[in-house]
Length: 165
Image 1 (cartoon, rainbow, N blue to C red):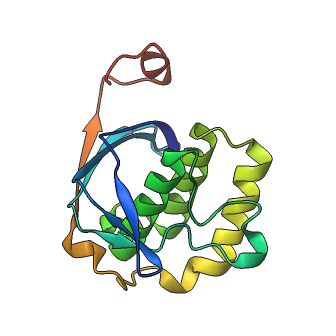
Image 2 (image 1 turned 60 degrees about the vertical axis):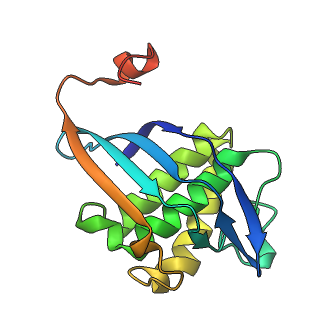
């Protein structure tokens, strides 16, 4: 799976007892391409205000690659919430473990990280987060819903031109 584009509503969160708490409802739209089938999809996720997550669950030794929280790039923080939400629901039965991490890597690229940095960070996530797949430690599955819709008239070019947004 490849993340082609991501858009989100106003993001407002604050630290809360070593974690982060969403202060407003958040809607996130991800346009993705499944290279295996050639299909394009729109994943629309909604997190309710009050959702709590860990930030980027990066071990201390690797925080130079990806921070737990970014004060300068809010997309990094939105991606950490999405990744935790997708993990907590086992990808809604649509995304598998690898696809979820592929989308995270694509999001980091969209946030401005180099291919090397994003791929290195994904490698660390693959090594450290596997045991959390399907685990709902922060009860995100109760405050996160998603709608998965196949989009038939979408192409990489149309997204690059701003269509479908």
